[in-house]
Image (cartoon, rainbow, N blue to C red; front, side, top):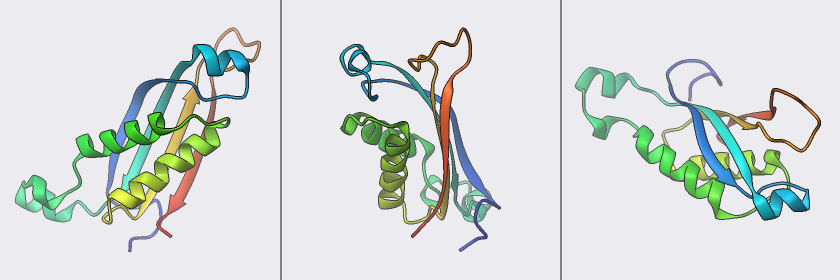
Length: 126
């Protein structure tokens, strides 16, 4: 396994989803936008050398796993949402050694004129 958070990576940024995660009654009833950024540590040497999709992890398939995990169940905290997504990625892709995942919530129920609330988890395959 590579040193955590170094080396090759597959990156998906600014993935937008609509969800019903949150503590507040309004969040659970009305929902809101969420944005996800992630980096997955994967050795890309074979796919770079062969130009064959069979030698890598498809970012389209990673997206499908992220979407299913995000939409699979409602949670109170975005920390739990991120943990659920990372667990799903590790379960689906043995090739992924580590994940950095950020969940951003631009309509968090706080009195901000501009900006977003966010968390970021860094996890190495258990």
